[in-house]
Length: 218
Image 1: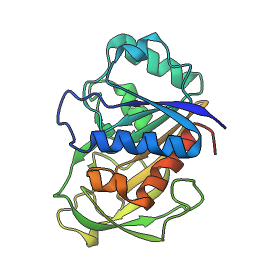
Image 2 (image 1 turned 90 degrees about the horizontal axis):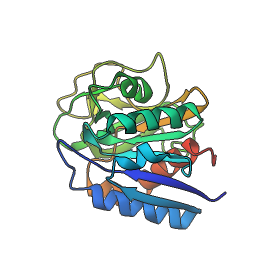
Image 3 (image 1 turned 120 degrees about the vertical axis):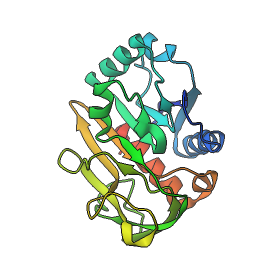
């Protein structure tokens, strides 16, 4: 099934050095798996209509990255059954737009230093996690969120806080989840800080599974 995704990387706050490598990785995944990835930082795309896209990927977006017409466009797209994928700092975007927080499921609070740790895969029945081991050793920033989204989303993986320094959420620390948004689909992974992540075969398969699921190709 051929489809198109929009990869959106606009930042008005902290900008991740890994963004070019992440965009390249999504493009390569598309080339290998039958979808086209269009990368942009133009908020006007959202106002002009997203109907050509099976999914929209917010890739380490930070700060306020949409205009009021763009916000309306994204909301209409999701209402029409669109797919949304949030990667890493997507949880740091659109802080003053309540709808975005509801769409994503949780908002970023803080993170410790980049370091190795362990993610516990809670649900391997999803394309983003079915290839992963039960305990996934990874290096990332291990985001804390203001609240756990567990009551309103399907949790796919969570952090083992005993495996790294500076954890702040406690026993319930989701990292990866998905949910239905009316007829639309939402997938989010907190992982993906460093360029090295986008070279990691397990992470690339994780990202691919999330994109394909949100785009209803899975």
